[in-house]
Length: 371
Image 1 (cartoon, rainbow, N blue to C red):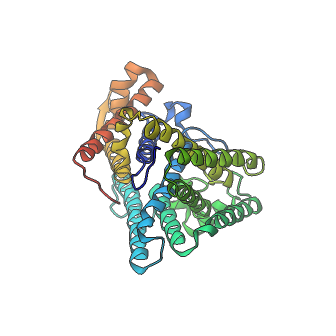
Image 2 (spheres, helix red, strand yellow; image 1 turned 45 degrees about the horizontal axis):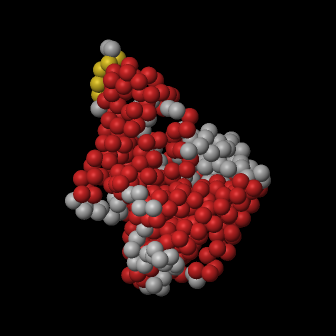
Image 3 (cartoon, one colour; image 1 turned 90 degrees about the vertical axis):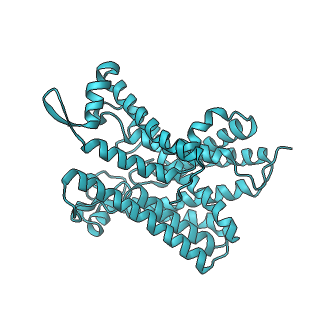
C-alpha cells in the first residue's frame, strides 16, 4: 500500500512554487498594455487564470498552517501565540516596507507616508495567517467549518446590503477603505483596495478552508485516500461556488464568497492532480523547477518585487526618449523580435527565470529563508 506518514507531500511544495512563479509572471509583463488576456485580472466580475494564483497560494497557506501547528498539538500556549503574532507582524511590515520602497524609488521622497499604501498582498497574507492560526489554537476544529459559514454568510450580507457588488464609490468596501485608510493610502487611487479591510473577512474564511482541507488530507496515511478527499473537496466547493455565483458574483476585487468557494475548489482539484502526477505516478523531474520557488516562497516573492521596482527606476534612453531598464529591455530587445504581446510575455518569462536562478542557488545549498 502506498502511504505517507510523516513524509510531506512533494505536491504541496510544487503547487506553492507554481503559484509563486505564477504571481511573478502575471505581475511583471514587459508592457501592461500588451499583456495577453489570460495574464490579466478580470476588470470586475469574472475569473481569469491570473485571478487564481493568489487564492491558490492562500489555500496552500491554510494547509501549511495545519501542518505547522501540528507540533503544538493545536493547543493554545503563550509561546505559540507569540510566535504567530510575531510572524504576522513581520510579514505585515515587510509588505509596508515594499510599498515604501516603491514610493521612495518613484517619487524620491524618503518619507512618503502621506501616500503609502497600507494594505497589499503581503499584508493580506499576514492578517489571514495570524487570524487563522490563532483560531486553530483557540477553537475546536469541529467548529471551524461553522465559523467559515458564518464568515462567508456575514460577509455576503454586508455586500448585499452595502451595494458591495457595484464598482462605484457607493460600495460599502470603498466607503470603509476611504474612511479608515484614506483615499491616498488605497492601491493606485482606485475606488477600493483589492486587498481592503472588509474583504479580509472572506479571505480569512479562505485560509480556514485550506486549513480544513489540510486536516482532511493529513489525518489519513493512504495516498489514494488523500487524493480522493482532495478531489471530493474540490468538486463540492467548485460546484457550490458557481451555483452561488448567480446571487453572489465571482469577483476577486471584493473577494466575494463565491470567489472563495470556486478558487478553493479549483485549488483543491489542482493539488489532487499534482498528488496523482508527482506522489502517485512518480513523475517528478519536471517539478524540480517549481521546488526552487516552493521552498522559499515569500522570500522569492519579496525579492521579485524589489527587482521589479529596481528595473523600473534605472534610467535608460531609447530612440532619444527617456525610459527605464525595464522599458529598454522590452522596447529595444524583445518587442522588435517577438512583437508587442509576444515581447511582453517573453519579458515576464525571463523575469521569472531570473528569480528562479536565485531561488535555485538557495535550493541547492539547502538555504531556507523563513519569513
